[in-house]
Image (cartoon, rainbow over the protein chains, first blue to last red):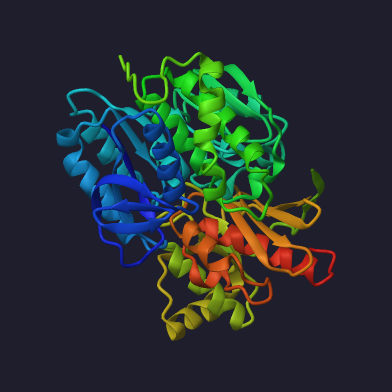
Length: 301
Length: 180
């Protein structure tokens, strides 16, 4: 099972747990319709694009409403801590929530009790809390953008808004240096997919691949495209790809979807995600050769 | 393409720091103190001084008594007022702009706001990872820069503060200023 946890931007959405599906432009969980917008919504919708295309089980989600006050975030933390052992997902994806280092430590301790340790993926503020708690290296995949890469490289920062200036000043051109610093500080996951003008796929400090084509600068302006990449890489891992393969294909697919959509800065992330099936159909086998074909053939090992 | 990258504002040098349990209290303290005419600046407290949240208020220490009085009058909760140590950091204040022909994207720290050059309507926000960011995304998109709600007023986190900074810079550009 692939389990995705994160907040949605509503005050009144209670903790909701269940399988998620896509209906048109909406996500549906336990009869609730939720929009595909920046944040956990875009991430889940992108993951669904992969699982639907490859005919895999749909993701399970643990979501709650939170507009920044923290109540929904706490409900998600508490659910995961209490239930992750019983649920025992193969892939656990953590996304938007109010960073809480204590709860993050509690979650990692709970994960240790799972019969089989899940692949742990973190993005957005769940990545901040993992780093802040000193548990970054416990995670398998982080998907930072260039600014967040500087945050990971800063040994003192607990939020990207407080990065030491000299690290931030060099965020675009010095990503390899920031990567080396972050691994040296043990403040990053085993595998990094750094999203930016050039995407970097890094494993244990070694840059395995860079992806810079097609070049679609407008994607940076579209809220949620980074979230979509996280959904892609997580779902490809769930499909059985090696972590680095999943990351490379996710980076390529997102860029190609932007090209297919003829992305402009005024587009919504859903318009990019809509392109994923066509991108997969045209490129998935070529990029890998992926062992999967449309219509099934799940050979997770 | 980055058209320019600006740096601004010297460090606040008031010598004092107010520590808080949560960000909401820090933001309220900044608001009431500025309204009362104090010069203050939001900063990250040094690790050695950190007692609650990761946001503190740099103040002019000599004004401590008056500041404590304002806090009492306005119901501001805080942990302590202490001398400012040497290692505190300020919120990132590095702004860059990208020109997309019909649109302009302004990036402040980790947050980005994109608006239509012709209409001044916000067409996108991106970046960040705190839970109020998708909420602010939904609240800001489609609104004119001059009519958009303030992320600082309706948000709760450091990402919201950075989004506020980006929005303020967009407004300056839209209104024909040179930016700060």
